[in-house]
Length: 213
Image (cartoon, rainbow, N blue to C red; front, side, top):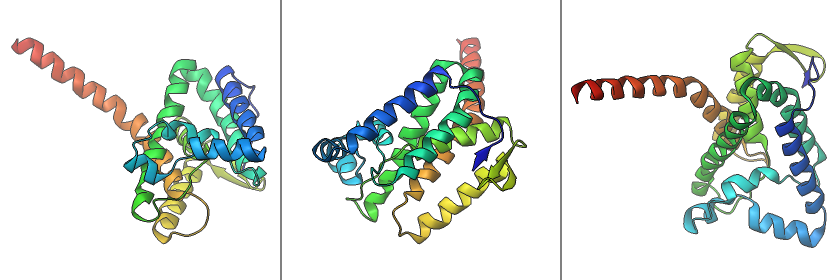
């Protein structure tokens, strides 16, 4: 995937990329990397049985040290699509959305408990796909170049990711956490679509309660 426009690095995007790169370098050090994975990776067993909730946030700063494409794809996507969203929302809302998507994707991943409770889940893909979904909501008809060759609209791209994630989540197998990807997309969509409607409904309810009071 290639974005047709390269935005400048915004402050939060720069900080997130820097944090991920630093952690990735530490992971390449055998003893340090093993310790980081043991403490910060998301495992459904620890999440449910031991209530180690910090893993829902820390797992998205880890990437497979032997798979450079993993972190490269996530950080480029974070840059290409996150920087413009940060300019629209501001730093606070952008970071809140990023972590809501990442933690939400982690919660989806806990469902692996019923299939493989000891699976290790790492990577920023859930949060990054949440940003991709938000970008598609704001700019559904903007185009990206899939594999640098095929033009595709943002909305079509995200729907394609969602369909693939559903199919492979049902099928199982492989070393890609498709359920995490699906979680990031779903949480982003609900946050952006249902969130405003929920706030409007809550405000109307509060107004009626005040009138009754």
